Length: 319
Length: 314
Image (cartoon, rainbow over the protein chains, first blue to last red):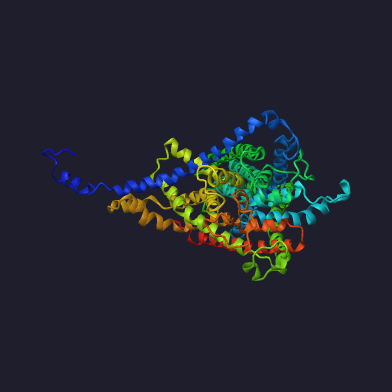
């Protein structure tokens, strides 16, 4: 403000509104808060850096084509073989069968909650499903081995059908456990997406004489599709990254197969088994943990970014 | 249906009657196939939700049946033993978990809420770096927990921080794992506070930070608390990252935060008992699962109740 002749009362007011002190405290607080925000960037950088160093070291010992195209994962043999496809297959095997169970169940539950359930049922069932999401994965893994395998899988697919021996570990048991784990993720996010579809779209369809099923499958489902796909992608990402369930129920036998009836080893299980205790730094085993971790991180990062983008898209349309 | 309004003339009365008859005929004639399919579809949906609920119920019942014989106060007071399953318990693991969680809370509450306040109240959302932070946090929330274990091993236990295999390192690893969950939940709670409240406070002469401290934060506490509880319960149930940062040593003493002697945690101890071939240890593992389930389900139920109870519509 200038101190011109016409300033008068206006100048008086602006002087009174000016802060009596420079408020350095405010600046300090803003700086501290910004630092908290930046910490997440530091975390990501630290993850990438801690993966990258030993991974580069790993590829100085093991050739890239053996790692990326080999199908034998036998680090403990002499000479060792590091064909990551064997444990990538283990991970994909479990994720695939888990999705075959969890996608229909999760989406069915979501459609029921969003379109069919009375408000009262919805209000009780949804929190219960969310509680399912809070069960520790160790408990689900134990449940998979000691209940799902002997009581569900073996009666449906008895040993007599395939060589007469009941296997103590198989991909299928881990898949069912992971399926149970990700059903609430799919159901909850898809239900949110479908509930966000404006009422008018449904009422228009009902006015044309559509049944509830037609409204659900041809109007609400397509309108919420990007949110639904996002929930499924996020669930796949969770299934791929899950450790304890595959460690307990999947076995520890690298196996290049997508068949649920085999013992397998998933990438996460390899990391969890190998990196425990006093593994000495600098060995190939130690470095292989980081190489596998890098592959895992790249896979989940891709899926997470797809999922984040899809969620954004549906939010933009209906908010 | 309400009575038809009095009509001006006979012709429009006829037209309305005709239209009504057509519509009624059309509605009555819903294809039989559609009606039948609709019923089957509704049945399948109900089946889906029942399968999910049955899975949950079976898990709870199975844990209780298997673990019930080992349930006693000894679980909380006895230390692990490899020879004597009757005398083995979870004391070091329970104490370890409690200390880990205390560390997680100390770290995650100030940093998580601070980051959320920065992103909601200070950051300019149109700037690319702020949007990058946002996407980065969403991605971090879905990074596999074992990757955080690798981070803990290479960055906290060894590497730049070089803390060694101590309990605090495990705590820090778990804290980084759940930090994005706290930030996301706190941001949603802060965003739900309407702007008019901020403007009212600023108009009365409060500074930005005074507004946040005395108006925005108190109004968003229930949402933030819900997020923190859910995050803490996630950290409490997490075993995978702890395997990598040293919680695998056989611990028969009460753990301390900075001791290099090792530490243990509930989910890891359960995993180790379950891996032993003897039946008694399997029972012990199941009893441990019961203890965890009771604690975690109570925490989650409380968080969900809190959210529903204090969900505020402005």
